[in-house]
Image 1 (tube, each protein chain N blue to C red):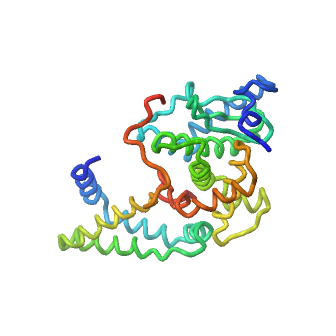
Image 2: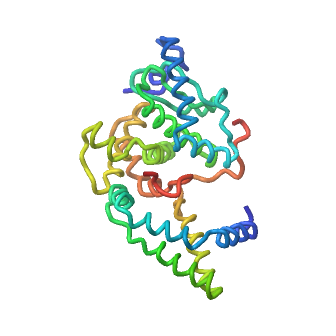
Image 3: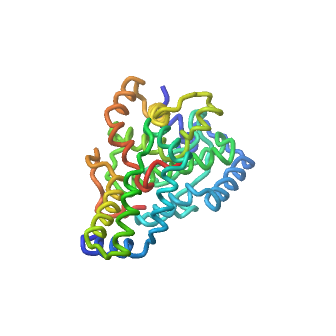
Length: 101
Length: 198
């Protein structure tokens, strides 16, 4: 996927999500179930700083049309996508799916 | 020491005892898992998005296997093997199918060398972590392995070592060394899930 399409997709994703969705995400993060799950997986509780920042940036962008807040929100979403991957993989990625599947 | 031929007797033809009743049960559980289990459905969707849509007739088979395994991924034939004689419940089917689909997903998206012990360890760590085998209640109440703080990592590491020993003719020390060398990187790699699923 080229960067332009990726950026457009992210912008669209940003405009489509409501601030209530980010609030739901924050509520899920601070819930006992999620905190327990985080402790079981990583050995420490989640701080939930990121979801909180996203709510603030979303409200700033939707109400005051702050471009800076929108950029911060976009960065936060992109960073979350990047966190799914390891920065230093032990293998190389395929450029296309295997032809013999 | 176990190796691949002992584990997948249905494929190698040695000592396989097919049972039509078990085969039918396996098929039924497979259908239920594909229709109802959220993890299996998520993995199938991820495979489709990655360009390797899973055709159940072609890519997933129920077979009798040796005593040590409940499933496997055969990269030569590009098939997920489900062991009809060892999968004892729907829950087991769900976990096994998700586990093997993680291997299939890795086959689809990376240049995985199945003879490279580190690659094998990495895909096993991911599969153990993401398939639901190491859920808290399974570890605590079914296997009686108590632990809370970061116990998921302990479980994933142990099960990855066990899985490698089922299919590779190597010592436990070698398997442990391979798993430990790549654990940190591979545990972090949760794709296609956004994070380790609950």
